[in-house]
Image (tube, rainbow, N blue to C red; front, side):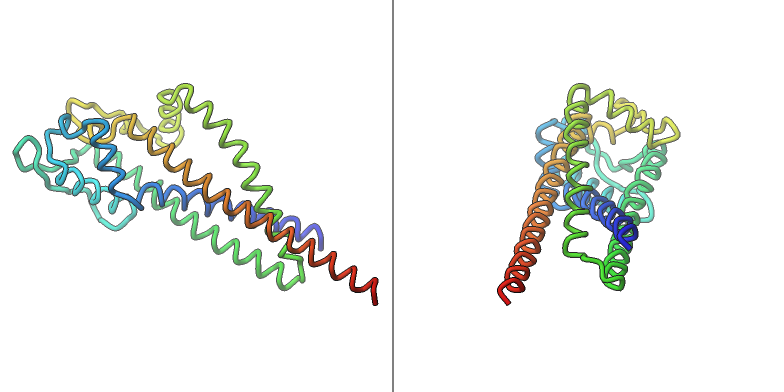
Length: 239
Protein backbone atom coordinates (compact mmCIF):
# COMPACT_ATOMS: atom_id res chain seq x y z
CA UNK A 1 0.00 0.00 0.00
CA UNK A 2 2.89 2.37 0.73
CA UNK A 3 4.13 1.92 -2.83
CA UNK A 4 0.69 2.80 -4.17
CA UNK A 5 0.56 5.89 -1.97
CA UNK A 6 4.01 6.99 -3.18
CA UNK A 7 2.91 6.63 -6.82
CA UNK A 8 -0.37 8.43 -6.17
CA UNK A 9 1.49 11.16 -4.29
CA UNK A 10 3.89 11.66 -7.20
CA UNK A 11 0.97 11.95 -9.64
CA UNK A 12 -0.70 14.45 -7.32
CA UNK A 13 2.50 16.51 -7.16
CA UNK A 14 2.84 16.56 -10.94
CA UNK A 15 -0.82 17.54 -11.27
CA UNK A 16 -0.41 20.44 -8.83
CA UNK A 17 2.66 21.66 -10.71
CA UNK A 18 0.87 21.60 -14.07
CA UNK A 19 -2.14 23.42 -12.63
CA UNK A 20 0.13 26.05 -11.09
CA UNK A 21 2.20 26.61 -14.23
CA UNK A 22 -0.73 26.99 -16.60
CA UNK A 23 -2.67 29.14 -14.13
CA UNK A 24 0.34 31.46 -13.79
CA UNK A 25 0.50 31.72 -17.58
CA UNK A 26 -3.23 32.40 -17.83
CA UNK A 27 -3.16 35.08 -15.14
CA UNK A 28 -0.14 36.71 -16.78
CA UNK A 29 -1.65 36.70 -20.25
CA UNK A 30 -5.29 37.49 -19.50
CA UNK A 31 -5.74 39.22 -16.15
CA UNK A 32 -4.63 42.75 -17.04
CA UNK A 33 -4.92 44.27 -20.49
CA UNK A 34 -3.60 47.49 -18.99
CA UNK A 35 -0.24 45.69 -18.86
CA UNK A 36 -0.37 45.28 -22.66
CA UNK A 37 -1.08 48.97 -23.07
CA UNK A 38 1.89 49.90 -20.90
CA UNK A 39 4.10 47.50 -22.86
CA UNK A 40 2.97 49.04 -26.16
CA UNK A 41 3.90 52.47 -24.85
CA UNK A 42 7.26 51.17 -23.58
CA UNK A 43 8.20 49.74 -26.99
CA UNK A 44 6.57 52.55 -29.00
CA UNK A 45 4.57 50.11 -31.11
CA UNK A 46 2.00 52.74 -32.05
CA UNK A 47 4.57 54.54 -34.18
CA UNK A 48 5.71 51.25 -35.77
CA UNK A 49 2.14 50.21 -36.51
CA UNK A 50 0.85 53.68 -37.41
CA UNK A 51 -2.23 52.95 -35.31
CA UNK A 52 -4.12 54.48 -32.39
CA UNK A 53 -3.95 52.79 -28.98
CA UNK A 54 -7.70 52.09 -29.00
CA UNK A 55 -7.37 50.14 -32.25
CA UNK A 56 -4.27 48.25 -31.07
CA UNK A 57 -6.03 47.24 -27.85
CA UNK A 58 -9.06 46.08 -29.81
CA UNK A 59 -6.83 43.90 -31.99
CA UNK A 60 -5.10 42.58 -28.87
CA UNK A 61 -8.33 41.54 -27.19
CA UNK A 62 -9.64 39.87 -30.34
CA UNK A 63 -6.34 38.03 -30.76
CA UNK A 64 -6.33 36.80 -27.16
CA UNK A 65 -9.96 35.68 -27.48
CA UNK A 66 -8.95 33.67 -30.55
CA UNK A 67 -5.98 32.09 -28.78
CA UNK A 68 -8.29 30.97 -26.01
CA UNK A 69 -10.68 29.41 -28.50
CA UNK A 70 -13.40 32.04 -28.13
CA UNK A 71 -13.14 33.21 -31.75
CA UNK A 72 -13.34 31.06 -34.85
CA UNK A 73 -10.93 33.11 -36.93
CA UNK A 74 -8.58 36.08 -36.95
CA UNK A 75 -10.41 38.24 -39.43
CA UNK A 76 -9.97 41.47 -37.49
CA UNK A 77 -10.75 44.76 -39.22
CA UNK A 78 -8.94 47.85 -37.96
CA UNK A 79 -7.38 51.14 -39.08
CA UNK A 80 -3.71 51.29 -40.04
CA UNK A 81 -2.16 54.54 -41.28
CA UNK A 82 -5.64 56.03 -41.56
CA UNK A 83 -6.97 53.22 -43.77
CA UNK A 84 -9.35 50.36 -43.01
CA UNK A 85 -7.78 46.92 -43.48
CA UNK A 86 -7.40 43.49 -41.92
CA UNK A 87 -4.71 43.45 -39.28
CA UNK A 88 -3.52 39.86 -39.79
CA UNK A 89 -2.25 38.66 -43.16
CA UNK A 90 -2.32 35.05 -44.38
CA UNK A 91 1.08 34.09 -42.93
CA UNK A 92 0.26 35.56 -39.54
CA UNK A 93 -3.07 33.74 -39.45
CA UNK A 94 -1.38 30.46 -40.30
CA UNK A 95 1.15 30.95 -37.49
CA UNK A 96 -1.53 31.90 -35.01
CA UNK A 97 -3.35 28.63 -35.73
CA UNK A 98 -0.27 26.87 -34.34
CA UNK A 99 -0.12 29.23 -31.36
CA UNK A 100 -3.80 28.67 -30.62
CA UNK A 101 -3.17 24.91 -30.48
CA UNK A 102 -0.59 25.52 -27.73
CA UNK A 103 -2.92 27.81 -25.76
CA UNK A 104 -5.98 25.56 -26.01
CA UNK A 105 -3.83 22.46 -25.47
CA UNK A 106 -2.51 24.01 -22.26
CA UNK A 107 -6.03 24.65 -20.98
CA UNK A 108 -7.02 21.05 -21.72
CA UNK A 109 -3.87 19.83 -20.00
CA UNK A 110 -4.81 21.79 -16.89
CA UNK A 111 -8.32 20.32 -16.91
CA UNK A 112 -6.79 16.86 -17.17
CA UNK A 113 -4.43 17.69 -14.28
CA UNK A 114 -7.36 18.81 -12.13
CA UNK A 115 -9.19 15.54 -12.83
CA UNK A 116 -6.04 13.54 -12.06
CA UNK A 117 -5.56 15.43 -8.79
CA UNK A 118 -9.15 14.71 -7.77
CA UNK A 119 -8.63 11.06 -8.68
CA UNK A 120 -5.50 10.83 -6.52
CA UNK A 121 -7.37 12.36 -3.59
CA UNK A 122 -10.18 9.83 -4.02
CA UNK A 123 -7.69 6.94 -4.16
CA UNK A 124 -5.95 8.15 -1.00
CA UNK A 125 -9.31 8.53 0.73
CA UNK A 126 -10.54 5.06 -0.22
CA UNK A 127 -7.24 3.35 0.64
CA UNK A 128 -7.02 5.25 3.94
CA UNK A 129 -3.86 7.00 2.87
CA UNK A 130 -2.61 9.83 5.10
CA UNK A 131 -3.48 12.51 2.54
CA UNK A 132 -2.74 15.31 5.01
CA UNK A 133 0.91 14.30 4.82
CA UNK A 134 1.12 12.77 1.34
CA UNK A 135 -0.32 15.74 -0.58
CA UNK A 136 1.71 18.51 1.14
CA UNK A 137 4.89 16.45 0.76
CA UNK A 138 4.09 15.87 -2.92
CA UNK A 139 3.58 19.61 -3.34
CA UNK A 140 6.89 20.42 -1.66
CA UNK A 141 8.82 17.90 -3.75
CA UNK A 142 7.29 18.67 -7.17
CA UNK A 143 7.01 22.45 -6.93
CA UNK A 144 10.20 22.83 -4.90
CA UNK A 145 12.18 20.80 -7.45
CA UNK A 146 10.71 22.79 -10.33
CA UNK A 147 11.60 26.08 -8.65
CA UNK A 148 15.25 25.03 -8.55
CA UNK A 149 15.04 24.11 -12.24
CA UNK A 150 13.18 27.34 -13.09
CA UNK A 151 15.76 29.52 -11.39
CA UNK A 152 18.57 27.81 -13.32
CA UNK A 153 16.64 28.01 -16.59
CA UNK A 154 15.75 31.64 -15.91
CA UNK A 155 19.36 32.64 -15.39
CA UNK A 156 20.31 30.81 -18.58
CA UNK A 157 17.40 32.40 -20.46
CA UNK A 158 18.41 35.90 -19.44
CA UNK A 159 21.99 35.44 -20.63
CA UNK A 160 20.83 35.19 -24.24
CA UNK A 161 17.06 35.61 -24.53
CA UNK A 162 17.08 35.74 -28.33
CA UNK A 163 18.83 32.38 -28.60
CA UNK A 164 16.48 30.54 -26.26
CA UNK A 165 13.40 32.32 -27.57
CA UNK A 166 14.36 31.03 -31.02
CA UNK A 167 14.99 27.55 -29.61
CA UNK A 168 11.53 27.59 -28.05
CA UNK A 169 9.95 28.23 -31.45
CA UNK A 170 12.05 25.54 -33.11
CA UNK A 171 10.94 22.99 -30.49
CA UNK A 172 7.23 23.80 -30.42
CA UNK A 173 6.62 24.63 -34.09
CA UNK A 174 7.34 22.30 -36.99
CA UNK A 175 7.39 25.07 -39.61
CA UNK A 176 8.95 28.50 -40.15
CA UNK A 177 5.71 30.51 -40.08
CA UNK A 178 6.91 32.13 -36.84
CA UNK A 179 9.67 33.88 -38.80
CA UNK A 180 7.82 37.11 -39.52
CA UNK A 181 9.04 40.15 -41.43
CA UNK A 182 8.39 43.58 -39.88
CA UNK A 183 8.22 45.07 -43.37
CA UNK A 184 5.09 43.06 -44.19
CA UNK A 185 3.79 41.58 -40.92
CA UNK A 186 2.13 43.85 -38.38
CA UNK A 187 2.10 41.19 -35.66
CA UNK A 188 5.85 41.33 -35.09
CA UNK A 189 5.68 45.11 -34.90
CA UNK A 190 2.97 44.89 -32.25
CA UNK A 191 4.80 42.18 -30.27
CA UNK A 192 8.57 42.82 -30.44
CA UNK A 193 11.01 40.50 -28.71
CA UNK A 194 11.26 42.78 -25.69
CA UNK A 195 7.53 42.36 -25.14
CA UNK A 196 7.94 38.60 -24.80
CA UNK A 197 10.86 39.00 -22.40
CA UNK A 198 8.71 41.21 -20.19
CA UNK A 199 5.85 38.69 -20.40
CA UNK A 200 8.16 35.84 -19.36
CA UNK A 201 9.26 37.90 -16.34
CA UNK A 202 5.62 38.69 -15.52
CA UNK A 203 4.49 35.06 -15.72
CA UNK A 204 7.57 33.92 -13.79
CA UNK A 205 6.85 36.42 -11.01
CA UNK A 206 3.24 35.25 -10.76
CA UNK A 207 4.38 31.63 -10.69
CA UNK A 208 6.85 32.23 -7.86
CA UNK A 209 4.23 34.10 -5.82
CA UNK A 210 1.68 31.29 -6.24
CA UNK A 211 4.33 28.64 -5.66
CA UNK A 212 5.45 30.40 -2.49
CA UNK A 213 1.87 30.42 -1.19
CA UNK A 214 1.41 26.72 -1.97
CA UNK A 215 4.72 25.76 -0.37
CA UNK A 216 3.92 27.86 2.69
CA UNK A 217 0.51 26.22 3.08
CA UNK A 218 2.06 22.77 2.63
CA UNK A 219 4.65 23.44 5.35
CA UNK A 220 1.97 24.72 7.73
CA UNK A 221 -0.22 21.65 7.12
CA UNK A 222 2.71 19.30 7.76
CA UNK A 223 3.60 21.14 10.96
CA UNK A 224 -0.02 20.99 12.08
CA UNK A 225 -0.21 17.24 11.40
CA UNK A 226 3.09 16.64 13.19
CA UNK A 227 2.00 18.67 16.21
CA UNK A 228 -1.36 16.93 16.33
CA UNK A 229 0.23 13.46 16.23
CA UNK A 230 2.66 14.49 18.94
CA UNK A 231 -0.19 15.68 21.17
CA UNK A 232 -2.09 12.43 20.58
CA UNK A 233 0.96 10.39 21.63
CA UNK A 234 1.39 12.51 24.73
CA UNK A 235 -2.23 11.97 25.73
CA UNK A 236 -1.88 8.24 25.26
CA UNK A 237 1.21 8.20 27.46
CA UNK A 238 -0.63 10.17 30.17
CA UNK A 239 -3.56 7.76 30.06
